[in-house]
Amino acid sequence: EPEVTQTPSHQVTQMGQEVILRCVPISNHLYFYWYRQILGQKVEFLVSFYNNEISEKSEIFDDQFSVERPDGSNFTLKIRSTKLEDSAMYFCASSEAWGIGQPQHFGDGTRLSIL
Amino acid sequence: QKEVEQDPGPLSVPEGAIVSLNCTYSNSAFQYFMWYRQYSRKGPELLMYTYSSGNKEDGRFTAQVDKSSKYISLFIRDSQPSDSATYLCAMLEQDYKLSFGAGTTVTVRA
Image (tube, rainbow over all chains, first blue to last red; front, top):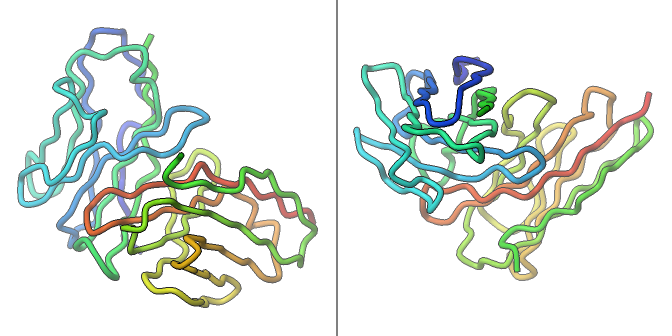
């Protein structure tokens, strides 16, 4: 069964450094998402992306964050200057479309640890 | 008031028991309802989704939605040790943003 793949599985970065998390969505999917889960807390929506632009973003997704689809297969989340509170699991998801009958499928996540 | 509240658990049941998981929500704009299963160190895996009130069955799993009471449930029949995981309810308006419950951890004892 097709799946969303994320790399790396674990990223350790010094505070203030830039980090890029990578995702390969399911190949025929058109909508892409990033979520995060701080340890012990709920999964939270960050951003959705369609047709090479952001469709919606949460208040968490501030100017330090950006997303890009640099080619036909990859979808990336960049954090420009990481903070300690950015430590979390980051999940990428994709769907064929949004709305009825088109659920979001998740990757296994990247654990981001900021030192 | 939190938008999506999920029974916190944890739940521990013997193999073969029925597992009952519940979420309530306050946002009447939610239209689509999903249940995800999350194993340790893995991403959420979609189990069930529905957009109407009533029951939806898939094998040993039944999802129930009551929009008038703003209440959804997931039932797992004949539970197996492999069902041991964290179960997340999630909801969607007419947009892209899934709103998740906090999750209920279930252990099925052999």
